[in-house]
Length: 327
Image (cartoon, rainbow, N blue to C red; front, side, top):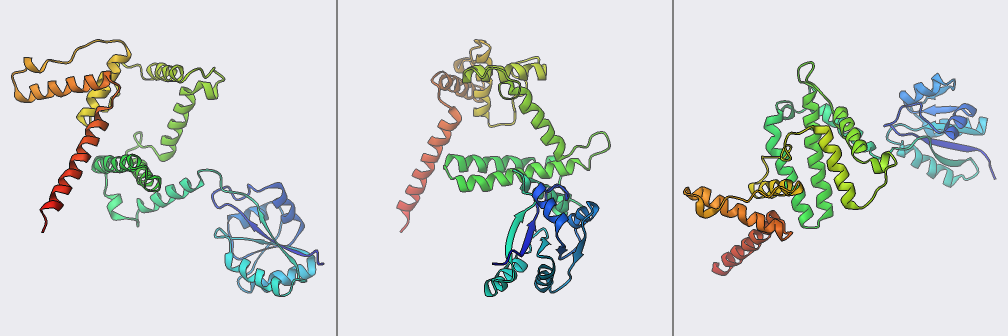
């Protein structure tokens, strides 16, 4: 049986071109190397002292000729993997099994999160000159509503236990993050930042706030971990009030629950205003709603979720009533 072999060497286009396994470098230095086009990988291989021959056409025959002479030959696959060449070679060697063995070798693999690099590259193309005029015309302020909308749609997918929809909606949320970050690169000098700054800040925060993972601290209970998180967060932010940092633009019911929760964490017993003591009808209604939210918190009920559930049930009743009135 022939020991001749054709090695199809596949590499990740998302890693530095010369970052290959030891086995890949061994075969590249010991056998003729062919490729279909010039690329950063061919340049890296040449820089390491190996010769690379670019074959414009007739790749299959060129590989067979080389393997007949040298016993082993390497095909340096392009970013797309050169599937057509692999398929053609496979069919030829299946018809003539004595010619050579076909071996697939991975010189490098995509690391976890590699497709995020693709997403950043695509967004850069869209928001650069010659890209999408709509995206280039946006600002952080003009996109604010879209960010909220995409977050709500992701929330809906979670509420529906639809994990496929959640995957798609999180992609839409990510799109907003990437677009905001790309637009920030156009800010004046001294104000601009990039997606790397966003990711870097997040990484630093996660490491700081999880010393039980990254600094060898004892994990303790979930309550202790949460308390540690809040303690580190307070030290970082140096806030004057426990209410600092609350998103004031969130829905009023959720906002009320969040403020009550923050006050409760430090043991503040500030009673909500009494509805009966309010003269203005709107203030009276608001005070009554705040009292209801406080009661829900005491009972361990999420008032936002409770109202949403009741509202959606009411919506179902409205639809049923509509159907009943149709001829």
